[in-house]
Amino acid sequence: MEAFVSGVGLRSSSFSPGLQGHASGYGRRNSLARTRKVGMVVQTPPSEDLIGGSLLNDREVDEAWEGLKAIVPFEVLRTISKPGRYLGNERGAVMKDWDENQLRMCLAYPETYEIGMSNTGHVILYSCLNDVDGVLCDRSYLPASDMVAALKGAGKDLFAVESKRSLAEFDVLAIPVHYEMGATNCLELMSLSSIPISWAERNADPSKPFDVSSGSYPLIFGGGQTVTANPEPFAEFFDFFALGDGEEVLPAIARKVDECKMLGLSRVEVLVKLAQDVPGIYVPMFYSMHEDGSVRRNRDDIPARPQRQVATPQPERALRLVPYVQTIHDRLTVEIRRGCTRGCRFCLPGNLNRPARDVEPERVIEGVLEGVQNSGYREFSLLSLSCSDWLSLPSVGIELKNRLREHNTNISLTLPSQRVDRFDEDIAVLVAGGEEKKSGITFAPEAGTQRLRDVINKGLTNEELLRGVKTAYLQGYAQV
Image: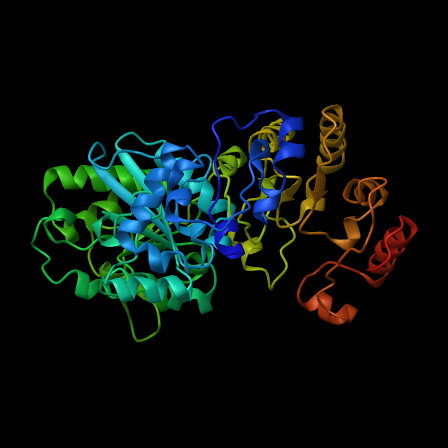
């Protein structure tokens, strides 16, 4: 039962908002013992009454559990690993009324909850959409095998975690494709929701007004860098694609679909309006592949070539949701730069996310301080394709450490991407945290010879590699 309790996710209305209170009382949520908010600890095996809310005394937890038990019987639910994945009652979750919002969209992430909630883009888009009046944005994740078996045993479809509604009840489903091998997970999401996997099947009655409540299937679109680079392998399965950054495109999609619903347009007419009026929308049915391999439009009233969209980073939006279940990247993440100027030939994100856009240092500092205060994380990470290329990194890192030290918080900093040619004493001290234990650091030269590094345009010499390793060694790193 330990796994069951640790996945429940306790909430408390008396949760302290202070920096020191979070650092000492909340910490990272990898077990119930480490999730003891305001000293509340459960030491007995859970029962239905206990989990139902008599101990937690929280209305949202009660509603989340009642909704989940309406889908899967409690006798089965108590055998599910980490049921907190499916509650949808995280700190910061937006609970909008279903009937009071005309347009309902679901971000259906094609991986398990722990991976989906580790993706900053997922949380950012959730925040962007829920800021639109009249739009309800919910979330869903690929369930683990035990929950898949439970849903099939109960004869239920895959549901959104907050509203507990079947995905087939939403007007629009947004499914990101982050890598080619994950494409089958997208189809699994549709299958578990009793939705046909091809757009042709979903468009069986093209003249019928688009209305999910009257039997229409949701509009399903894909996004992410994989489909932005080449959507054609997935063109049979998605109604349309959003190419490029989504912070501005997804709210525009929601508004346009809502407008088309009120006009009583058919499914095809809605797709035409999206292609015409929303930049960056690619609708496969309106384009045909020719013998020479080129893809060209088959009607003249849509763009000949949809343009990839570029948005200004909004790192503060990634702080809106705090999961109660330990995630893959169980830390606060703040984006400092989007894109890269290096031009390595093997790097898809570096070539797609152009131009490179830096986040202002003040916004990064404010984001980290706000995130630490409101989330309770003991570790934060600055996110970029190459953090060391962000020129403000040393000054911002030092400022953050000084500000956090004023609150007596033991908060550590991690940097996911290090280029050895930009690694110097300032960055080494920043990452190591002064007196903190220095276990090891990783550099990625990508190739073992100078010729191969030149071929892939890595821009790294043997001398720079040796200098970076020497710097790490002199700064006390035990392993490189």
